[in-house]
Image (cartoon, rainbow, N blue to C red):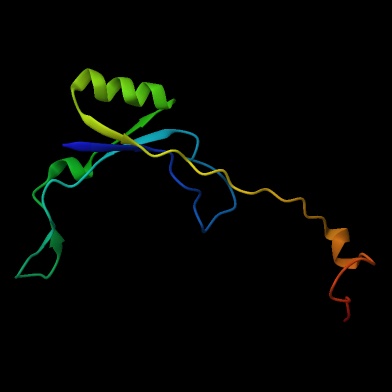
Length: 101
């Protein structure tokens, strides 16, 4: 039983950063998923895949894993590149592509 501790990525469909400040603990699958022959649905007998725990800090999540004796892997978040963009830059003289109607 191995767990992954990570910060979830920003939702690609929204511009906000809701639900990305907490650390999340997910369990790795212990057995592969199988296709049910009757309905064709993908299923698994591993119930820990349905469990997700949220923590305020990475240290809280690591302490939980160590207290419960769970092997864990911490995945550090990547910093996003923030660039300054202003509407006035569309009309600047130094613009590479000249603005036209």
